[in-house]
Every structure is written in structure tokens, then in C-alpha cells.
Image (cartoon, rainbow, N blue to C red):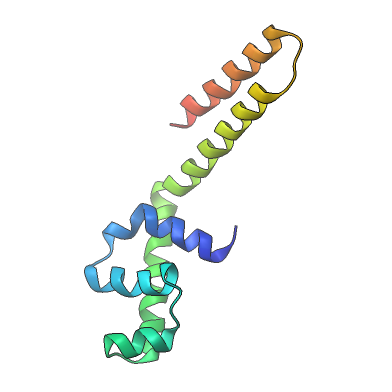
Amino acid sequence: MNNILEQALLYDFYGELLNEHQKNIYEQFILEDLSLSEIASSEGISRQGVHDLIKRCNKTLAGYEAKLHLVEKFLAIKEKVHQINEVLEAEQTEMGMLIDNIKKISTEILEEL
């Protein structure tokens, strides 16, 4: 997965667990795509300070994911839903096969929740 996309997903799931200062700077870097220098200038801190804070936020968010696995579960469920849609769109002549495939995927989703 793309690093920026991964960071954005982690922020979406766990961002509220950061303090306001961390959220503000992390949003500017990840979501608004500002450079370290631009953020440092607007916040009145050093470029190194911004860099260190972003690294700490990344480590903190990754730690939450390692314990809770919410992003992992979200991505797995999203994939299962795509599989359901593919099965529904597939041209299968036997309705029984279609129903069995849907039941199997639905059962997997429920087991993962």
C-alpha cells in the first residue's frame, strides 16, 4: 500500500487519539501535503521539530494499529465486499453456485467482525 495512503488511513482511524497540536501538524503534512518548511514557518517551530513530531505521530498511530488492527480489518472487509460484488456481477448459469459463494463470503465477513 502507498505510504501516504497508509498514513491517511491510520490517521482516519486513530487521529482523534492524538492531541490537538499533533493533529494539526499531522493533517498539514499528510492531508494538505505541505512541506516540513511550510509547516514549520506557519507553526513557528523548527523544521526538525516538525519532522520529529511527524515521526512520533507515525509511530504512535502504527502502535495503535498493531494493537487494534482496525485498518487491517477495514481493508479485509472492503476486499470481501468487492468479492461479493464480483460474484453478483459474474455470469453464472447455476443460481445455486451463486448463492453458495455469497453465503461463504458473508460468513467470512461475519467471522472477521
